[in-house]
Amino acid sequence: MAAVLSTLEDQIRPDRAALLIVDMQNDFCAQGGYLQKERSYNVDFAQTVAANVQAALTAAREAGMLVVWIRSVYDFKYLAAPHIVKRGQEGCCMEGSWGADFFMMEPRAGEPIIDKHHYSGFIGTSLHEVLQAHHIETLVLTGVATNVCVDSTLRDGFFMGYYIVLLEDCVGSNSAAGHNGTLATVRNNIGTVTSSAAWIELLANQQHQEAAK
Image (cartoon, rainbow, N blue to C red; front, side, top):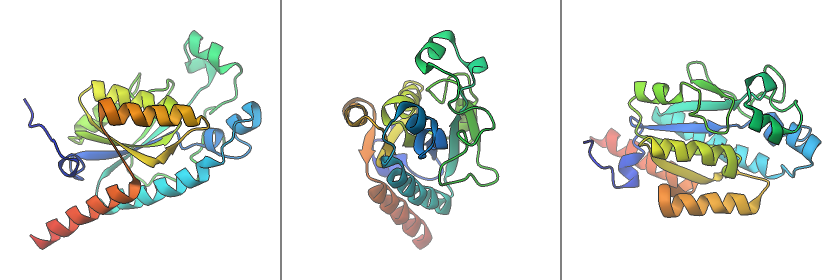
Protein backbone atom coordinates (compact mmCIF):
# COMPACT_ATOMS: atom_id res chain seq x y z
CA MET A 1 0.00 0.00 0.00
CA ALA A 2 1.36 3.44 -0.92
CA ALA A 3 2.13 5.88 1.86
CA VAL A 4 -0.74 8.21 2.70
CA LEU A 5 0.04 11.83 1.87
CA SER A 6 -1.92 13.55 4.61
CA THR A 7 -0.72 17.13 4.16
CA LEU A 8 -1.25 19.47 1.24
CA GLU A 9 2.46 20.24 1.23
CA ASP A 10 3.27 16.59 0.59
CA GLN A 11 0.52 16.16 -1.99
CA ILE A 12 1.59 19.06 -4.22
CA ARG A 13 5.29 18.35 -4.50
CA PRO A 14 6.15 19.06 -8.15
CA ASP A 15 7.47 15.55 -8.75
CA ARG A 16 4.14 13.97 -7.84
CA ALA A 17 1.53 16.56 -8.86
CA ALA A 18 0.13 17.70 -12.20
CA LEU A 19 -1.67 20.92 -13.08
CA LEU A 20 -4.77 20.11 -15.17
CA ILE A 21 -6.22 22.90 -17.32
CA VAL A 22 -9.74 21.87 -18.27
CA ASP A 23 -11.63 23.31 -21.25
CA MET A 24 -10.17 26.83 -21.25
CA GLN A 25 -11.47 27.22 -24.80
CA ASN A 26 -13.08 30.02 -26.78
CA ASP A 27 -16.48 28.38 -27.12
CA PHE A 28 -16.77 28.19 -23.33
CA CYS A 29 -15.01 31.40 -22.36
CA ALA A 30 -14.95 34.03 -25.11
CA GLN A 31 -17.41 36.68 -26.18
CA GLY A 32 -18.70 35.33 -29.48
CA GLY A 33 -18.06 31.75 -28.41
CA TYR A 34 -20.76 29.09 -28.51
CA LEU A 35 -22.07 29.49 -24.96
CA GLN A 36 -22.28 33.27 -25.13
CA LYS A 37 -23.53 33.51 -28.71
CA GLU A 38 -25.89 30.54 -28.95
CA ARG A 39 -27.08 30.17 -25.35
CA SER A 40 -26.69 33.76 -24.11
CA TYR A 41 -24.58 32.59 -21.16
CA ASN A 42 -22.75 35.21 -19.16
CA VAL A 43 -19.04 34.45 -19.62
CA ASP A 44 -17.71 37.62 -17.96
CA PHE A 45 -16.09 35.48 -15.26
CA ALA A 46 -13.80 33.81 -17.79
CA GLN A 47 -11.20 36.55 -18.17
CA THR A 48 -10.56 36.68 -14.42
CA VAL A 49 -10.38 32.89 -14.26
CA ALA A 50 -7.98 32.85 -17.22
CA ALA A 51 -5.69 35.41 -15.58
CA ASN A 52 -5.58 33.32 -12.39
CA VAL A 53 -4.95 30.13 -14.35
CA GLN A 54 -2.12 31.86 -16.17
CA ALA A 55 -0.47 32.73 -12.83
CA ALA A 56 -0.87 29.14 -11.66
CA LEU A 57 0.49 27.89 -14.97
CA THR A 58 3.59 30.08 -14.66
CA ALA A 59 4.21 28.82 -11.12
CA ALA A 60 3.77 25.19 -12.15
CA ARG A 61 6.20 25.55 -15.04
CA GLU A 62 8.77 27.28 -12.85
CA ALA A 63 8.48 24.45 -10.33
CA GLY A 64 8.94 21.79 -13.02
CA MET A 65 5.44 20.39 -12.52
CA LEU A 66 3.68 18.47 -15.25
CA VAL A 67 1.05 20.56 -17.03
CA VAL A 68 -1.76 18.72 -18.86
CA TRP A 69 -4.21 20.47 -21.17
CA ILE A 70 -7.66 18.91 -21.46
CA ARG A 71 -9.65 20.00 -24.51
CA SER A 72 -13.25 19.30 -25.52
CA VAL A 73 -13.98 18.24 -29.11
CA TYR A 74 -17.72 17.91 -29.49
CA ASP A 75 -18.40 17.11 -33.14
CA PHE A 76 -21.51 14.94 -33.19
CA LYS A 77 -19.57 12.09 -34.79
CA TYR A 78 -17.77 11.64 -31.46
CA LEU A 79 -20.73 11.96 -29.09
CA ALA A 80 -23.07 9.39 -27.59
CA ALA A 81 -26.76 9.86 -28.37
CA PRO A 82 -27.72 11.19 -24.89
CA HIS A 83 -24.99 13.83 -25.19
CA ILE A 84 -26.26 14.88 -28.61
CA VAL A 85 -29.75 15.33 -27.15
CA LYS A 86 -28.43 17.66 -24.43
CA ARG A 87 -26.17 19.53 -26.86
CA GLY A 88 -29.18 20.51 -28.96
CA GLN A 89 -27.33 21.48 -32.11
CA GLU A 90 -23.91 20.90 -33.52
CA GLY A 91 -21.43 23.76 -33.35
CA CYS A 92 -19.68 23.69 -29.96
CA CYS A 93 -15.93 23.03 -29.90
CA MET A 94 -15.80 21.69 -33.41
CA GLU A 95 -12.56 19.97 -34.31
CA GLY A 96 -10.00 22.46 -35.66
CA SER A 97 -12.24 25.49 -35.11
CA TRP A 98 -11.58 28.82 -33.39
CA GLY A 99 -14.13 27.79 -30.78
CA ALA A 100 -12.06 24.77 -29.81
CA ASP A 101 -8.86 26.83 -29.51
CA PHE A 102 -7.48 27.68 -26.08
CA PHE A 103 -8.62 30.95 -24.50
CA MET A 104 -5.97 33.51 -23.49
CA MET A 105 -3.23 30.88 -23.08
CA GLU A 106 -1.32 28.28 -25.05
CA PRO A 107 0.45 24.99 -24.32
CA ARG A 108 4.20 24.80 -24.58
CA ALA A 109 5.92 22.19 -26.67
CA GLY A 110 5.96 18.89 -24.81
CA GLU A 111 2.97 19.61 -22.57
CA PRO A 112 0.37 16.86 -23.14
CA ILE A 113 -2.94 17.82 -24.76
CA ILE A 114 -5.79 15.39 -24.08
CA ASP A 115 -8.79 15.64 -26.40
CA LYS A 116 -12.04 14.41 -24.87
CA HIS A 117 -15.58 13.82 -26.10
CA HIS A 118 -17.21 13.51 -22.69
CA TYR A 119 -17.36 15.83 -19.69
CA SER A 120 -14.71 13.86 -17.84
CA GLY A 121 -11.12 14.07 -18.98
CA PHE A 122 -10.66 10.40 -18.11
CA ILE A 123 -13.40 8.76 -20.16
CA GLY A 124 -12.15 7.41 -23.48
CA THR A 125 -8.80 9.22 -23.26
CA SER A 126 -5.16 8.52 -22.39
CA LEU A 127 -5.15 10.89 -19.41
CA HIS A 128 -4.65 8.19 -16.76
CA GLU A 129 -1.83 6.59 -18.76
CA VAL A 130 -0.09 9.96 -19.19
CA LEU A 131 -0.34 10.68 -15.47
CA GLN A 132 0.91 7.24 -14.49
CA ALA A 133 3.87 7.53 -16.87
CA HIS A 134 4.91 10.64 -14.93
CA HIS A 135 4.26 9.00 -11.52
CA ILE A 136 1.57 11.54 -10.67
CA GLU A 137 -0.40 11.16 -7.44
CA THR A 138 -2.11 14.55 -7.13
CA LEU A 139 -4.26 16.50 -9.57
CA VAL A 140 -4.44 20.29 -9.26
CA LEU A 141 -7.62 21.31 -11.07
CA THR A 142 -8.29 24.51 -13.00
CA GLY A 143 -10.66 25.45 -15.82
CA VAL A 144 -14.34 25.50 -16.75
CA ALA A 145 -17.04 24.78 -16.03
CA THR A 146 -16.57 24.14 -12.32
CA ASN A 147 -19.75 22.09 -12.02
CA VAL A 148 -19.55 20.22 -15.33
CA CYS A 149 -16.22 19.18 -16.87
CA VAL A 150 -14.01 20.17 -13.93
CA ASP A 151 -16.36 18.37 -11.54
CA SER A 152 -16.59 15.26 -13.73
CA THR A 153 -12.83 15.06 -14.15
CA LEU A 154 -11.95 15.54 -10.50
CA ARG A 155 -14.54 12.98 -9.37
CA ASP A 156 -13.19 10.34 -11.75
CA GLY A 157 -9.66 11.21 -10.68
CA PHE A 158 -10.58 10.79 -7.02
CA PHE A 159 -12.27 7.45 -7.70
CA MET A 160 -9.10 6.32 -9.48
CA GLY A 161 -6.97 7.12 -6.45
CA TYR A 162 -5.60 10.60 -7.12
CA TYR A 163 -5.43 13.31 -4.49
CA ILE A 164 -7.53 16.29 -5.59
CA VAL A 165 -6.66 19.96 -5.14
CA LEU A 166 -9.13 22.50 -6.55
CA LEU A 167 -7.93 26.08 -7.03
CA GLU A 168 -11.14 27.96 -6.29
CA ASP A 169 -10.25 31.16 -8.17
CA CYS A 170 -8.97 29.22 -11.20
CA VAL A 171 -12.33 27.62 -11.95
CA GLY A 172 -15.58 29.23 -13.01
CA SER A 173 -19.10 28.75 -14.28
CA ASN A 174 -22.04 30.81 -15.44
CA SER A 175 -23.95 29.02 -12.66
CA ALA A 176 -23.01 30.38 -9.23
CA ALA A 177 -25.03 27.63 -7.55
CA GLY A 178 -23.26 24.93 -9.54
CA HIS A 179 -19.84 26.47 -8.92
CA ASN A 180 -20.40 26.72 -5.17
CA GLY A 181 -21.87 23.23 -5.04
CA THR A 182 -18.74 21.69 -6.53
CA LEU A 183 -16.50 23.65 -4.15
CA ALA A 184 -18.55 22.38 -1.20
CA THR A 185 -18.49 18.78 -2.45
CA VAL A 186 -14.73 18.79 -2.92
CA ARG A 187 -14.11 20.48 0.41
CA ASN A 188 -16.36 18.06 2.32
CA ASN A 189 -15.85 14.76 0.53
CA ILE A 190 -13.08 14.67 -2.05
CA GLY A 191 -10.02 16.82 -1.52
CA THR A 192 -8.69 20.29 -0.82
CA VAL A 193 -10.05 23.64 -1.95
CA THR A 194 -7.57 26.50 -1.82
CA SER A 195 -6.73 29.74 -3.57
CA SER A 196 -4.16 29.97 -6.32
CA ALA A 197 -2.16 32.47 -4.25
CA ALA A 198 -1.91 30.06 -1.30
CA TRP A 199 -0.96 27.18 -3.60
CA ILE A 200 1.69 29.26 -5.41
CA GLU A 201 3.13 30.29 -2.05
CA LEU A 202 3.40 26.65 -0.98
CA LEU A 203 5.21 25.82 -4.22
CA ALA A 204 7.61 28.72 -3.74
CA ASN A 205 8.34 27.66 -0.16
CA GLN A 206 9.10 24.12 -1.31
CA GLN A 207 11.53 25.44 -3.94
CA HIS A 208 13.28 27.59 -1.35
CA GLN A 209 13.60 24.63 1.00
CA GLU A 210 15.04 22.45 -1.74
CA ALA A 211 17.50 25.17 -2.74
CA ALA A 212 18.67 25.51 0.86
CA LYS A 213 19.57 21.81 1.19
